[in-house]
Image 1 (cartoon, one colour):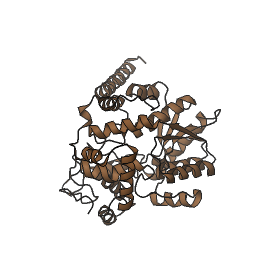
Image 2: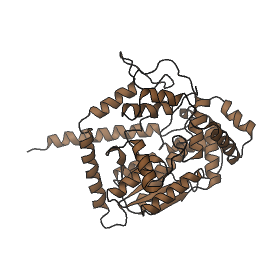
Image 3: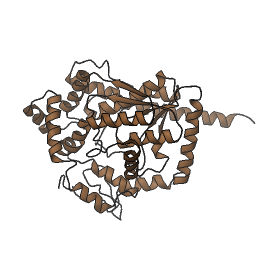
Image 4: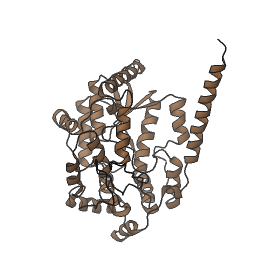
Length: 382
């Protein structure tokens, strides 16, 4: 076994007590399965209604881009989700501008997959390159701080990069490969909010004085301005159309010559090693549990198949060892320094400054304004 099951486990999926907010009902079914069922039971969440809504979004994007070169921007990592979203967008007649964030960790296979996609689909690619010394010091700050979300810098840069590129090209819509079939809100403590720029800067400043001049940044206030003033919208395209991951990968292989990676998010060497080794070793949980559980709920995987997968290492142990050597060398650490980081006690993101209070205040003000507007509307005489 790679990571042993901890305590109670859901009777339907494979979530266990490594998720600190796990709760089981009288049938032994966990909150994540119940949340999935509630979401699917909402009006408009059946496949036909979702696809109709997806077609409406496509029509909006085409209309907004009618007199422009592009209809939208789309993030492209080279992974299965973003790659298939790009293929689907092209099939639907959209004219996306693909945006790739180069943080220095792309695998050679990811570079090849991205090149094949944009060439064969005839899509323009806009690449934002983060200076390696800046990004190395930022990620090292997260490692030394002992916080859980080493991917927060990459994910923040992706979100900020897409919104800023959309603004640069005067585009309203940011289309992503997010999808409700395979993605889910992670358990409490398994990650941190990606747009918490204050938290990111606080962790950075506590451990390095390196500049962040080339790093794409978007504050919570900037995000609110983009969404509520500029009316930029985030569109999770794959959530509206049937998405069976195994079938999507087969289509990408057949039509693009796309090649799969070892493990989820294998397009990035640091992501592969972070999810496959650092999280289980230092923080005691395996992210495959939540991803496999989502596949179980959406009917793309059986519980027995998921249990069999969890009994294996996240990816080839020989590749994992090569990744370890590469990661340590690329970070300019010694083996002893890296091992000391891994053995040090974890720390919560909440131990560093955050803009969470500001975000909650903005939600309260927005709710108050909506209630006031509704009250005034009721007081208008007929």
